[in-house]
Length: 251
Ligand SMILES: Cc1cc2nc3c(=O)[nH]c(=O)nc-3n(C[C@H](O)[C@H](O)[C@H](O)COP(=O)(O)O)c2cc1C
Image (cartoon, rainbow, N blue to C red; front, side, top):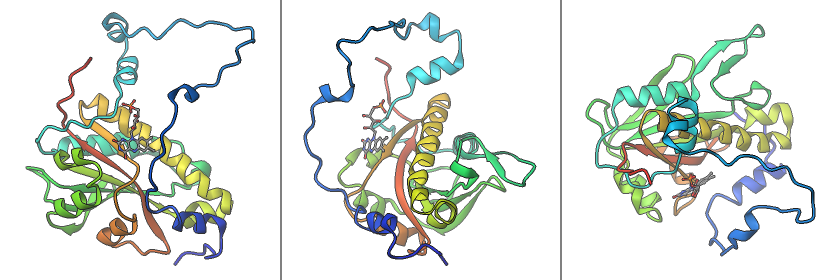
């Protein structure tokens, strides 16, 4: 059971931000700071030409990364999912201190985030809720079943989720970060999530799959914790991704 004190600032903040508040309008011009009177050094613009992109898989993948909201009504295949999870989050070794090394950076090597794929449509994976076991590089079936209704109800603010054959949830195991770093460890969990998500986006692009981050559903995140069966004080879901083959047409 968690050693995180109930009165911690981080936990209070966490509990009070489980439901999305009404988004406020904002001005796009505020998205980049400018020092108008400074001396500047100009760089070349990104070269998005096919010729440049054909020179390197890395550049092409980086430049074509995007959020996809137009999922084909296809299913997710085991081969694709296995590559997606292994390359995005997998183990790439164990260091001399016995610490696992993965394909993404993690503050203090604590790896506080667990990954739960929910399979909503597939020809070769049984529908249900799974856990990605990093050490064994395997999918663990937690619950068999068709969870389309529950997922669509949770994300009813985002109708494109209806066509996605797979949702990947991230949960945070608070103690892994916070036992080492205290309240600050809570921040590190979100920074880790950023590293993991970018891996997921880039790998999906590389595999020709669509992906979009889902910051919040309609209801409290607790609903997904209950669906998966997480112990509330120990581990909470906080981020999701819709994943699947897409209809995206390049601009
Ligand atoms: C933390 C986070 C939460 C997001 N949540 C959502 C979401 O709930 N729904 C959605 O359609 N896109 C979501 N996005 C995707 C952004 O809208 C998208 O990344 C942004 O518009 C830039 O577009 P691009 O990813 O295609 O470059 C989220 C992205 C991030 C990083």
